[in-house]
Length: 154
Length: 157
Image (cartoon, rainbow over the protein chains, first blue to last red):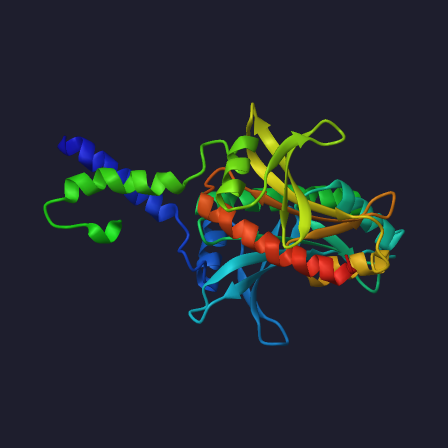
């Protein structure tokens, strides 16, 4: 009985350790998570004073923004953003990116004024989410970003 | 429930607490169409499980005055690890390629596109396994509610 109680308690502690706090994640927690997964995480500031994280995967530099934040700077959503500077922009610009958006999942694409393509993925990290789920979302981002790279001829 | 922990009851609570937590967890492997339909009805929403015009089994519902469908992906047997909320409108005056591009640049969560008939579509993908919970599902529906209302207004639907 004592061992069963102990095992049960350990399982609970393990589960609790993988839960994301109800209010979401702070920027330092996202940095720690990224670095723990073996990725660089450089805290940067936009010209508007917003802090974000610069990182890289699959040979692509991309940024991570924290959104829907409370007064304690705990945020319930993350936004992954990658832009690709093509020499002559994306051929057929908006029509081509619409082809991506109509046939793929997860990442929404757009083209900027220079017809350079961008992709974005928004995820919720709270309430009711875990680091396991966040890891899974990150795998999806990396996989879909690879598809996006192929799609735009990067 | 956890606040009811009292001295002398620790051993009992160690067993009860994980069960309370797991009651909110989604089943391993994700959700079935029927799970989702029951969840929608539990929220007071309509839920119609049926085949779409391509024979794909989906759940249809309505929120904020918008009819929408839920598609199921990464399924093993009937249980699916991700779902997609989708809503479409017949061609809209503001549903131009430029406006679609602007939505995808400036807005969040919903991926917008035009199909071959210039119908306007908005889709939102979420991962529900591993590590998914009903609380997450509830939050995703609230997100969908607010975003799809914005989407409708943005394109004049």
